[in-house]
Amino acid sequence: MLSYLKGELVGKAFESPRGAYFLVDMHGMGFEVLTSQRSVDSSPPVGQAVQLFTTLVVREDALFLVGFNSKEERDLFNILQSASGIGTKVALSLLSALSVSEIAQAVVSNNFNLLTKAKGVGNKLAQKMTLELKEKMMNWRTVDFANQLSTETFQGASEAFVEAESVLLSLGYQPEEIQRSFKAIAAESSPDSSELILRESLRWLAHSV
Image (tube, rainbow, N blue to C red; front, side):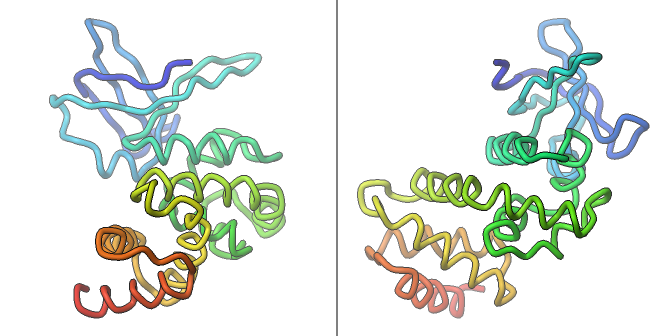
């Protein structure tokens, strides 16, 4: 599997007949990589070096690369495609309309209305996504938190962070703010329940946001 590409970014498009894409020169070979509009927004300027986390999509009549600026976005793309009715186009539409945390929390909390913000995602498909992907998404977020935070200190507490994140998102905090608060409290204490994590995060956010 082609896990990532490193090269010079020689072109990119927010919109095109094929959707958003990057064009990367790697040792004289040009790779066209389909992506999300959010990845295009956060990518470096044309002419600079870029690293894209990729997945190779194989169809009966096509073979193409999809890639993103972050490993989390690539991993979530693969998870989304495992649901019935979610192809490359719909998965990229979701990742263009919503952040990684917003999609994950929408699925975990059964907030399928949020998923319908993406083009091509209606109520029926959004509800099916939450049913099919909830357990898989929960497991992925749990592992993701364990990797982001101090694994030794927070072994076994990752699910509590997922629960606390869901509450903080419902209160209107941004995913980036929540992540910063979790890292801050991880460096200072060892909360082992969602209630403690929520309390400490709210205290940190009140003074820092």
